[in-house]
Amino acid sequence: MKTLEKRIRECNDEGKKAFVPYMMAGDGGLGSLKEKLLFLQEAGVTAIEIGIPFSDPVADGEAIQQAGARALADGVTLRNVLEELERCKGEVKVPLVVMTYLNPVLAYGVSQFVEACKQVRINGLIIPDLPLEESGPLRDELRETDIAWIPLVSLTSPDERIARIAESAEGFLYAVTVNGITGARNDFGEDIYSHLQRVKRICTVPVLAGFGISTPTQVREMGNHTDGVIVGSAIVGAFHRDELEKIRKLVGTSAGKVEIVN
Image 1 (tube, rainbow, N blue to C red):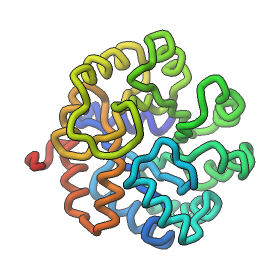
Image 2: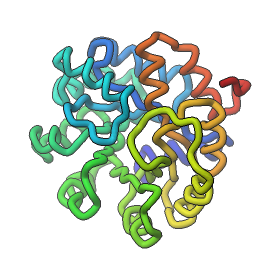
Image 3: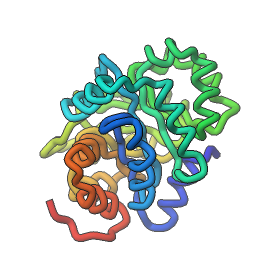
Image 4: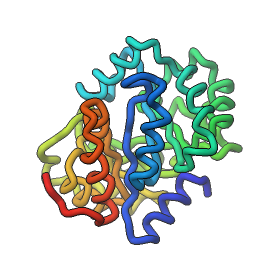
C-alpha cells in the first residue's frame, strides 16, 4: 500500500474524513509555496494537492484559471515548482499530490518528470486530460515508486468503466461531483449521493469527492458518502484574499472540530 492510501485509511480509522485542499503553486509568488504548505499542514489536512499553472486548463473554473494565470505571469513552471518543493523536504511531512496536465509532463520528459517527483517526495499524481487508455506508459513509470496514480471518474461514467478506472487507481479514486469544470456550486443534483455510494461499492481504494465543494456543509455532506473530500476553488480564493481562518474552518469540518457556518 502506497503512503497516500495508508494516510487516508489512518485518517478514517481515527474517525475523520480525509480533507485534501488544492492550491495553485506560484499564486502569490513561488516563494510563498513553502509557507502555504506548512500552514495547511498545521491546519490538519490529510494531504495537499498542488496545481501546476497551465495555459489551457480544461478542467478548471474561473477561480483556479485566474490563480494559474497569476502564477504564469510570474514565470512559474513545472520545473521550478519541483525545484521549490526540494526546499520543503523534511519540513512538509503530509503527502503531496501534483495535479498537472499532460503537455507539461511530455515537455519535461515522462521518465525525467517521475524521477524529479521521486526526488522531492511527491506521493500522488493527477492528470485530468490523460484518459485511462493512454495512461499505460506513465503508470509503468510509477509502478515501482511511492507515487500513486489517481484517476478521475465522472458522473456520466457507466459502472463498467468505473470498475476499469477503479482497478487502475492507487492512493484514492477522484469522484468528480459535477458535469463541468471546477468552481463553487450551491447544489449538486438529487442523484449525487447515490452516485458516490455506487462508486464506493465498486472501488477498493478510498474514494474522495471533488469539484464544486466549497462550504463546511458540503464538506460534511459529501464526506458522509465518501472517504473524504477535495476542496479547490474555495482554498485558492481564500489564499488569494488572505482569509486563512476560513481555510482552518473548512479543514476542521472534516474532523468535526468546528460548528458549521456558511
